[in-house]
Image 1 (tube, one colour):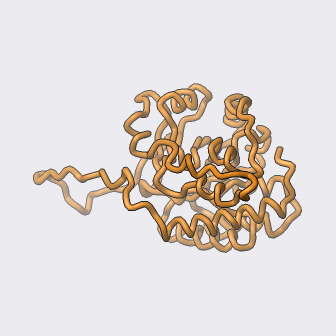
Image 2: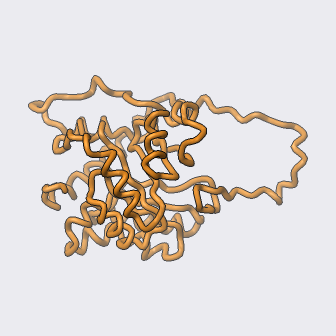
Image 3: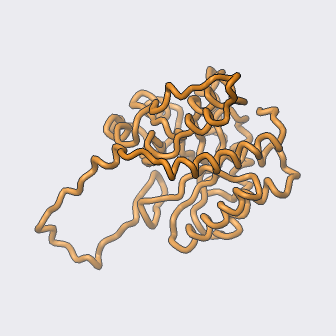
Amino acid sequence: MNAESPTVRAARKDDHVELASEQRTNAPAYRDFDEIEFLHHALTGIDATDVDLSVTVGDFRWQTPFYVNGMTGGTEQTGIINRELAIAARETGLPMACGSVSIALDAPNDATIQRGFTVIRDENPDGFVMANIGVGRPAEDAVRAVELLRADALQVHLNSVQETVMPEGGRDFSSWQRSLETIIAASPVPVVVKEVGFGLSHRTLERISELGAQIADVSGKGGTDFLRIEDARRTDVQGSYAFLSGFGQSAMACLLDAPASGPALLAS
């Protein structure tokens, strides 16, 4: 369990939002998503009024094939963001995930931290909501995270690249597979295993399936880059990891590489 103070962790949450926002204004000119083209069929023989955008994801049926992915929560600023996202999800029927609730699990008496997450369910009481914890947390935290948001599913994120670059990050990933297995077994709701932007390889997706997960989000490079975010938070004394910029696989590459027998896939 992370021994950092809630103040340090809250500051990191706000840093992430600020630095991710900066990335949006300096987004790469090209992503693998740009290679996607629609294959036109001139005689489809359909009635547009019969088109159904709902999709089956594991045991779930979503109204749309899109969802609001998890990134933030746990501070006053991020609580405002989560409130706005929850309202948007409520009005559009989109499923929604929050960012890691670990900070809330470790500070159960801090009203501001708790509110940064619970506002999602307050604003969207009947929507599909996913809680989020990092691999490596105690298995019982899966239950606590789900209870915090009355969640329909639980995201478990894998972020070894982010942890490596993060100034306060850990680098012992040797227990992660066992941790993921116990979290999946303990969770009262289905688990979605997700990366944080560096992709899930064929081998990793196979292992995720073997550990009991039915759904995975490949979350490949091309969106928010947490390597760059954490590198921007490092001091000159700590050194830079800028040489690793672009590390990982894109969501498109992950989908093409994915095993046919693996978990149901989300792509972000």
